[in-house]
Image (cartoon, rainbow, N blue to C red):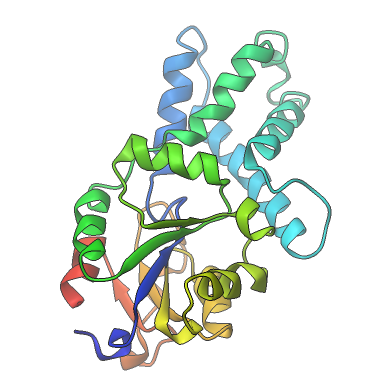
Length: 241
């Protein structure tokens, strides 16, 4: 076992990008749902997601807004369709179609190692989400992608968004564990820095779509870096235990 994880009893996971491939899943589904439209669906997905990042970080910092990401996704979609780049889609997508598009975020596909790695980890420790997603979204996603969570911590359950301290400390408290017995697993260094700042252990997972400009510079503490462990898959993480 990796010495830095020896006393860890629970692993909590960022989901979007770390556990599931949001970009590939949503852009492919948009293409399938709109077969008569020739659009850059990857760019559309990226813009939608960037709006989500801005909104959740603003709320995490004390700003107003919903802790239900379905509400956020719909508000952002409506805003995007009023912009010059996407306004030509505004009249083509009625209310029902927009609802269907927002639900795409409930059915994201895991990375190739996700299911196998998490089932292996589940045998050795508690595993759960620590995600800005809503509880129902995360439940639907788990069923869709065969993800065996023991527990779900979400923005609407903990009443904030990462990187607000409520998220990290709230998860540890509800598990009846001190933060040092909980490891945050993420493909985003900002998430792990916040978790470490509240006493959690940190596991960085390299994913092809996340932290693209900085992931190669992230190193474990044993190599002079700032996280406890760096892995390339959940299977590799399970093997460390």
